[in-house]
Length: 419
Image 1 (cartoon, rainbow, N blue to C red):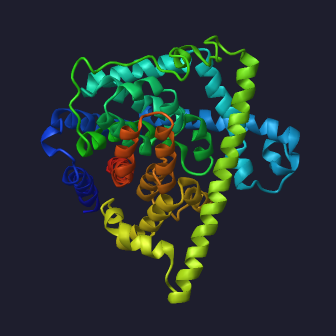
Image 2: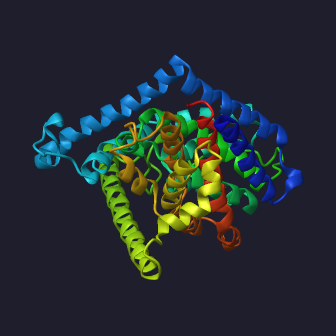
Image 3: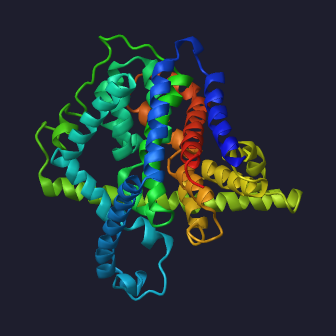
């Protein structure tokens, strides 16, 4: 019965995308069908076959290994922040040590792969292959892969030439897709708090569902002459294909580039930590104010009521669905780190069923929340003209809807195969 409800949920999420479509007659149903089938096959493969499970487990173990290597640098500077298991003297590790400080190794590592041209090469060819299979425009397919590795604002920043040359309707599609991304360099942080195999499973599933949802919500016909990929870059069009460049168009010296990367990683840690602290505090303040009205009233309860139907459609019983809905709401109002921090100590215990554990992890693995809309709008403001930016700013609701539907679809599709 619960499996049937889960399947119904996936259908309902797709129906919502169709209901809110800007141009129902322009939806490319063949492409939607192909991508949906591909997504179901991937979810089935990664969750139900030994080789698929081994692939995602191996990838998760790889990111965990990187995090453990990062602890060696942390131990040198702050031995009392790291537990004896990794060479330190601390009794336990806090959120910043276990989840954020390893970013100081992982981000530069991915930047080095970009500098030497490996990562851009992977993005380019995987994007082209995805376009061939799904029938989607080349750049939209390219961008869906690019943002998985680089993050939303970073992918937009290195795509300036393309964004400036495209129609505003296509730019809106990219803004909506950006709500569903993650950054590869932050996967290690996720895998320290929630099951890594489901985090890694969510990555390709999110990419494909972003294509499905944006194709339904904002279908755009792209003529063959428009379906091109400009060389990606900021001040120099070859930057993303050959590594960082300086103002004169020459490749930046490696150690100068590496220094900038490390500083960027440090800023990223501060941004994440500041957001988590501020949003948790603001949520607590709202709860205190709501408690003055009714003692039982809280932000989580309100959001739980709103999101409950969508959580129940994941194939959960009523009590689990209400708890899941509260986690969903908290993630959308704050961010995924807040929820992951709450469940990190219990998600791998008997307190969570396999199905619950899988769908919750997959739902959390994206940047879809209210604050992300501001980041995306701010990024577009610095790149495209006023007309393009106004269209994106007027469609904040569609951006949020896109991010939510992708997360729901991804969790629902994976949930079908995990019980």
